[in-house]
Image (tube, rainbow, N blue to C red; front, side, top):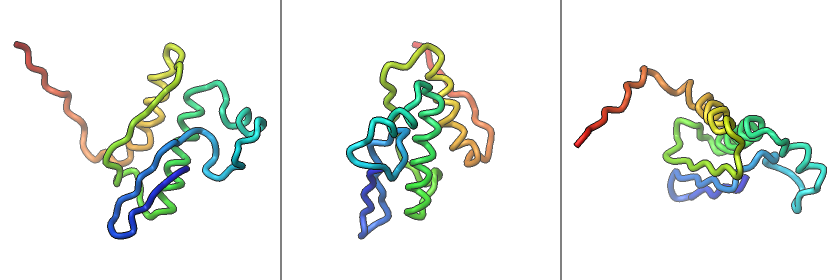
Length: 108
């Protein structure tokens, strides 16, 4: 996946993550796209998160070092977003050391 490592500091920018493997032919071959971009958002999300993990590992970082992430889902089916979110959360779950408290709400 594309990544830029700032040599004078400790910043790594990742972008353009998909379910395609980190190293693949460019331009993509149709059979590779069909093999990795299956019509299942949960599977695609897991493959994308594995690609992010591979890039983080190669740079000496991990999910605990992430500051921000943005997820873009094109045309998800009903119910897929929750499944994809559960996959993403599973990568962060080992990092949570205490139970989360519910957010407080204010009503005016």
